[in-house]
Length: 85
Image (cartoon, rainbow, N blue to C red; front, side, top):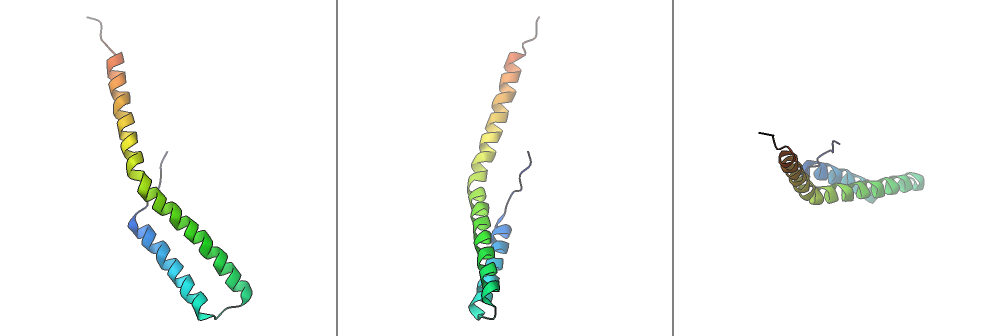
């Protein structure tokens, strides 16, 4: 299974987008309908950003666990194969 490895650039890009939306909302140059849509979009982007940050926080441990499991599997396979002499 391949997983996108998020970086600080992804976090920065998400924050830039949120900042731009906040600046637009702060300007007041929109209709109520557009404001509602932007607010919902901002909430979706905040949730996405939370996911990216959570992934970045957990990924090093997941990667370490995966490496350890692979090493254990390799050792178990090596032990289970004992040639007959």
